[in-house]
Image 1 (cartoon, rainbow, N blue to C red):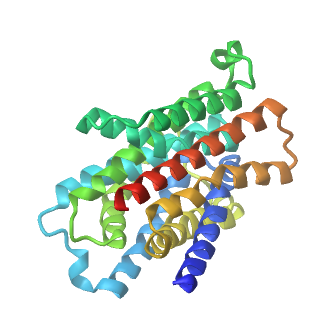
Image 2 (cartoon, rainbow, N blue to C red; image 1 turned 180 degrees about the vertical axis):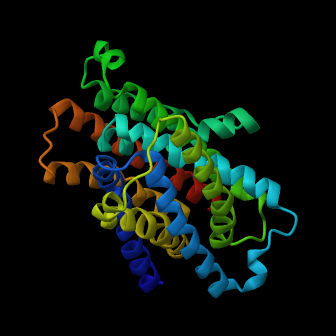
Length: 306
């Protein structure tokens, strides 16, 4: 049992490091490559790797949709296309730390989604933690000056990242509509239509002048960033996340997952970025609130099982 826990913690920490580096790496690539073409290249590679893995792990039968092509396409376009395009177009106009801290709100937002859809009101403690986390995000984005938000060049980008996060939340909730499908199968069979959606969005953006076909030299110049975003963040981290849940359980994995913004901020500091004290305080509030809520939920589950 302890061996499995050690493996789970190790795998989850690797996942945290990978995801924590996602936005700084993507931001570097976006200096040379627009978000549409970056997403197209990223998911082209990832989709092929996922297909190979699914065939290897579950056989040719797992590659069939068995009557679920339409719902898989819906969630694939919503989650993969919507998330990738909105988040990375937003990131091009914002900063890695803003994107990471906004994405950290996904877990508490799910509680509100369940409240709206199923009438399950979150506990008062959870609502308090969510409020504190939102206030922390506000401090990071505004640097303590509310008037600066509307005039900030990153405001539109932050909104797009938030909308991308909402797309991903809908995608993850949609996974329950596919009972009997493994996480790898759901990821792969939704990734395929989602990638097609990215191609279509990229084509429209290119024809309308909002994106441009990159030169081969440009793609090669950001080759390692693209490899990281395709192979590490989409394939390896997702597989490791599922492994961690198997070893530790969802709550424990999510507890460690709350450290992703910490890694992003640390990378940005190593890159030479200097944060205002209030930005660091806001980030600390977000992480602390998410961890506190996780521990609270763990206590409720333990008490209910007793």
